[in-house]
Length: 328
Image (cartoon, rainbow, N blue to C red; front, side, top):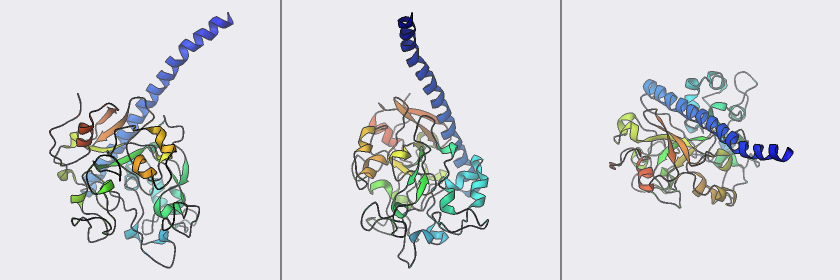
């Protein structure tokens, strides 16, 4: 009898696990849908998609995280908070200061750095058991752990930030490795390594050098820029922020299509900090067989790992004039 029960459990368990993952996948699709709708609402009110300013630190006599509002160290997800039922979070922020500032805000209790250490369910895929992780992020938030000349020496251990499972589409750029267009990562900072006149006057990045919709630092598209069509262009897709220093909800998060979706998950645990961004700043999920993407028109699609790579990259460029659309 015991043997029969054991056999039945062994037969039923995969079906139960599959049903649970199916439910989690539906929940994840709903979450990225809400992000897409929030971005559309933001565009309607501001005339462009939200942008982020990330790695544009300047030399000063204090921590880089205490920079002015123009050097705001905030991801593109922060301006979407009011459209995602998170108005109380942004109300407690001091938007005149860096998003990494750890000085008390007007209420005398909250700090900008402390607020972005709060895991927000709206940015967490239920299939990721590590989605609620809070850990040091990259660049100014990495302290000195990332290596000489990186991070902010005033915070040797780095600044812990809540991760995200959803990253903006920066385009079909390579990440130093992988397949894609120049400049790498679709970004250049303060003129460094930009070439071709990519640097914008304010230290950000000119739009002509970003083939996606949101750059790493200082530029975002309007819908008029998306000449390939809103329904044919990724706005955002899934990522594994717990495996990537460059993907949190408060400071920065981007991804490119340098590699196919879900490319070699195992490799993210083997690379050191100087190597990992080349591989981890891509789209990936823990759903079997693919990942969710929200298009610029707000529609959500589950893109299979097996998608033709040229089609996948075409879907991440906003004005590539590629004769490709979503796979049928």
